Amino acid sequence: RLMDELAASADRAVRERLHLLLELLTPIAKSWPAEFCLEANKYAIQVLGGYGYTRDYPVERLYRDNRLNHIHEGAYGIHGLDLLGNADYATFHGDLLGRKVQMKGGAALAELAARIAETIAGARGVEGLDAEAAQLEQALEAVAATTRRLLGAMAQGAVEPALANATLYLEALGHVVVAWRSLAQANAALR
Image (tube, rainbow, N blue to C red):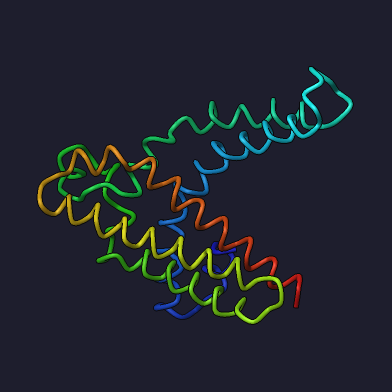
């Protein structure tokens, strides 16, 4: 969707915000599904009763097919570093790190947070979505606090401990992004 909006927009400021958001969401879009869609498939197999290997339901095929995402992607930890990395660390270790959360003074993360907040506001008052909107708002606040803490630690020279948590940060932000899109879909469906 962001690629379509980017191609369709003639407004330079809008295009810049879309590009930043696309850059921020790319490591999440590449890595989060490879990790957590496999987990969803594992649960689906358990829901069917765990009666062994079967071809009666498509979950066996979905699990097998999704397992390949780790092989195809193979960079979950690297994407976490890319998302949270430090610019000085990136200069030393190449262009891989330090481009996403901190780029343009955090503008991409601010754009994402604004879009999520807009979705939360739109879901308020919709019957059946208040609790989900409140949970997403709490999760967004938790990620914002974690971001401040990790970036603060890195600014004080504690780069390694912050980067050691980069993959966990990717997972947390990925959960928030998926919850955001789920809330938007539920809001559209209920309206």
